[in-house]
Length: 208
Image (cartoon, rainbow, N blue to C red; front, side, top):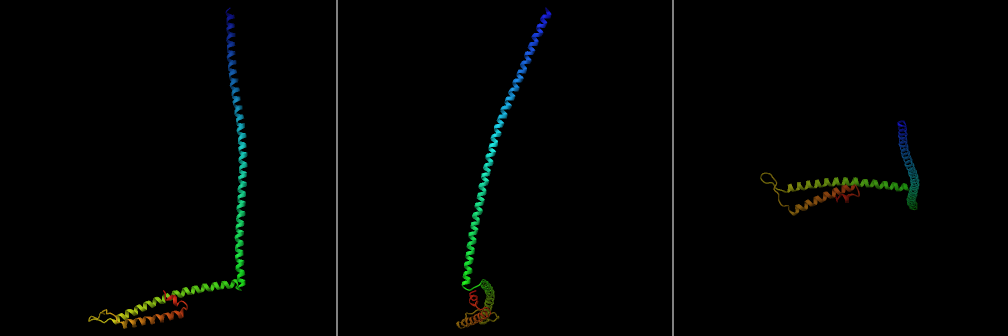
């Protein structure tokens, strides 16, 4: 009797253990199926993301190609406009040069003659400048000479006191007229000297 009960108890415990094991296995399989489903869903989402990414890449590539084409068109247009502008300027320059050459030919003047004339004018300007400097120096010397003469005449016209020191006196009109005439003669003499050495600049030198 006890053996029978022991056997029944063993069978019952074995069934419970088997049921628990089956429940655990079922739970494990369920978890595995859920994980597999989650992985499958994630894979599908990744596939969609990959498709969307590839579509965006294709759109970006097309837009980049369009932008490069626009840039190339703009560069070609800029080069074309610049070439047109340069050609227009060159044409204007050539036209002006041609007109000038025709005018020179009509007047019977060659380019070499014009260059020689320009060189001559430049030499004349340099000569006039040097003559002006020389005239200024002569005029300065003339002023110093006239001032020294005026001082000598003033000292000569002043009587001396008992100590020998000149005493300033008022000039007589005759003395003033004589001094002015002497100064005028000196001016004319120096002006004639300047005119002989540097013709054409006497009137400019006298204004300095």
